[in-house]
Image 1 (spheres, rainbow, N blue to C red):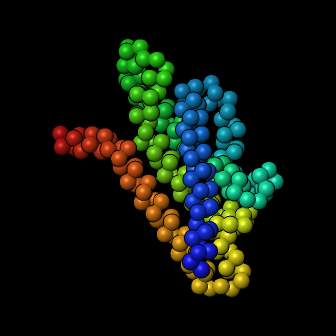
Image 2 (cartoon, rainbow, N blue to C red):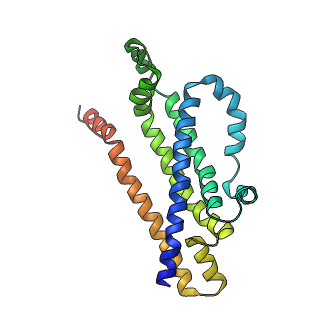
Amino acid sequence: LGPRLTRDLLPTLQNFFKGLSIALIGGTVVGVVLGRSSLLRALLAPIINFLRSLPSPALIPIVLVIFGIGNSMSVALIAIGAFWPTLLNTMDGVRSVDPQVRDMVRSYRLSPWQNIWRVVLPSAMPQIVAGYRISLQISIILIVVSEMVGSARGLGYFVLESQQLFRVTSTWAGTIMLGVLGYLLTSIFVVIERRVLSWQIRMRAATGAA
């Protein structure tokens, strides 16, 4: 039980972090672009609204056909499912940047890259991080679903196989491991979130004290 469970933990973590990284990076980049361009938002709004309304598990047959059974399928499903919360929150965060801040940027004549890096992203970061949190939760669910449906390794596959073979102890061990994994990932994210948004926390504290 021990070595088998440990062996299945590694591919789960690898696929999880690969899929989530693709979703966060892609969603942030596309979100910034769409948030700053009203024309692109108008053109792509119907497509975005249609795709984001599709339940991620419903895409499993399509992803299976394209990527086959294995790690690539799990990574792709996580990337697709976790992409949308990050995209939408980033887009809204960029659009909600204070108009006075935009006017100040024009007066300083910052380059587009300096504007994005020094002004837009810091101002939109609270909403972007909120999107990251949702993407994280979705990724935890999708890694389990993808491994149960289209993988021969991983914790999801381990739990499903143990259940089908009536290995009660193994089933419970795998389920508990999934719960612990989800809890640890969420706790780590909370710590990172507090560090990233520490400036905002301090600013709110100073405002409240004033």
